[in-house]
Length: 154
Length: 291
Length: 107
Image (cartoon, rainbow over all chains, first blue to last red; front, top):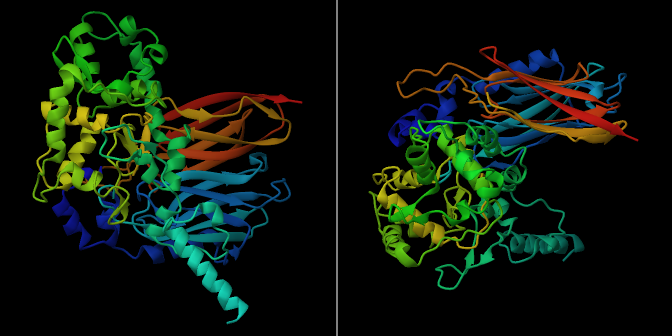
């Protein structure tokens, strides 16, 4: 993976994208305005509605040990009954080449709207989890995760 | 002075003390949020070590685990979140698979790995009387393949070899590292020691420059460890796969801009014997999770 | 894809919400990485994970290239009866990996 990239080419790539020095694997397309791209993707997802605060909690380290594997979890406060449950949680990332990281799809049989995985973060960025409830409302939580350029680990 | 500002001052003081690790974490009753800095997150956890054996250059031995973040430690601790554990099933299958002209599998000689391989990796690299030199675990696996199974050796960094080393290492998990350093192996320990302290590369650094003198300190945003090897093969978050020890050592050598040793070379062997001896008593953590 | 690893409790009380963890080996090639030859390595990821209980889907995940290699997925399930969980991973080449686990409901 990234260890195949020589220091010199990493530096060259760094001149074009902030993320390049951190995560060369995802840097090739870091140049476009990913924040605008993410905002557009979120707008499309909610149909223009502004998600409300509360109910949803995004777990993300404040500082990632390494951007290639960052533990990420979401949980939404919901009774999870057929009458009222969380349909989906979509996780958006603001500085990765693609705006969506993962979408979790829940049902009342999930018992709890809770899920976690490991994600890649190309640079220090905002991660936004948006919950789509069964009544058509949206809730969101945003966390910033610092992706550092390490000594030997980075 | 108003009560409010006094409280603020108190919390600032205890916060600072906490951030520098002077107070046990149970004292942290302030409701102010700690500053979001790498130093603060690192200080939140006090590394737990074990007393170093007599003659060690360290007072306390720390596994590299102790210098990792809460999330990375949690990932290693959870066998169903630690991606290194994915090596076990394929290697267990390989263990009983017949390969080579001799028509043998690992289990033909060694039986049930969960019993016979217990404690093995804790003592590697180990003196091999037949070869009259020490061998690493990876080398021993390949000697078994070529000499007894009459099969092709597995390549350095190949999934097969790294998975098998992880599977065998895992059988010793929790057992203390104990590498024999006296007897015929002693010249190798001495040679490894010389290599450990030899400055190499354009940056003119030795292993000791980082891992003996500055462990626990930051190298940019990263925390230096004591360079212990009790977690190998280890799952690196950066590489997103299991990394054998010699690959990691090659990484160090590239970082100081030296020419890395060749895999399975005599120099690596000597160095690995010596580094293992510096971790005498640390628990085997294979497969570890590191950044 | 190798044999997936799963943590599913063997028993649960009726109506209990249990936590399931799964781990599978996969490079999750993002499609944004250049290989040694300087050309982009084609995208090759697990794009869909589904979990069913007695044949009914109760959880799923749409994965993107932002998910790390060797995907780990943790989620919950409400167990009302004895039954079988089935987990399915599908990658860009259409390779399907399935795994099953049984659970017994105790009084």
